[in-house]
Length: 401
Ligand SMILES: Cc1ncc(COP(=O)(O)O)c(C=O)c1O
Image (tube, rainbow, N blue to C red):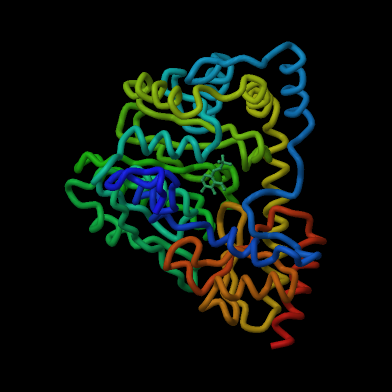
């Protein structure tokens, strides 16, 4: 016992048990766990994180350095600088129909946008439904706030991953507060069809359920005729209970800049501004200036990137398909292959072995929810030669078993 503390009072030094129960109960990242297992392995080819191996394009970096040169080092408006909000409103209007500036807010990353959007509409004791497999942040954020999360699993079949809409509707009961959806989906690459979006939106309208749609991969769609993935913004009016979250990270290769945005009912903007004040206060102005360059000068870049990603996806699918026991399908969106292979029934253990023994860094399917077990995720946003080197390592590993 600490002698400096009177009996009955808490000990002077804290233990891990002092953090809030909700926080202690959060899942830690299994991708990090795999990365940690590889510490000390000199030569690892990492395909486990969701980012490209290419740096942000020069025209975006130049906009940031020019802004810094002009002294853009101060706090700014909670909801973002006016020129970026205007550029976002025009961009969203071009993609999804009329969207006014007062429906748009700038955030310090997509993940911060998800946290803010969830804080806006869900809290302790609320029932939240999420469609999984899913990037873990979406499922854990409501839990930080004390909400109860129920998951509805996508199914894997001959056509790849699909949603049983009736099963989702059955889970969206009266009293459910919020539905969390991510399409195009990380990790599966599943893209929700417009018909399914319409059915789910109608159901949520009837029951007054909020939808947070994470559409950060909307530009990474490989479906002909749907080069921009179907969005809830195409169907819902801007003042309904729909909040769309987006990011500069994926389409403009800006993961390290931490810049995202929210499209939400104008009536929520004052409250969103307060939440931004108490979370981050604002996004850095020079980063916002870079965002303007991305939106106003970046269209050719995005299209080129999507073409390169499609080629990488097809290249990796072809190469993996030749390996014994590997089952893989080309997904319609995002930048990952989520595939099964021998040993993936215990995907965390397999990925740790792969990193230690084969120098191959993949993400375990179990990191994305129970439906993900049996699969591993490979981010293909990189040079095809690197993909080939990774496939050669996997081939050697499988041959040695
Ligand atoms: C589904 C999904 N949503 C949101 C994000 C957040 O992106 P960022 O915080 O880099 O903007 C990611 C990043 O990987 C993601 O996969």
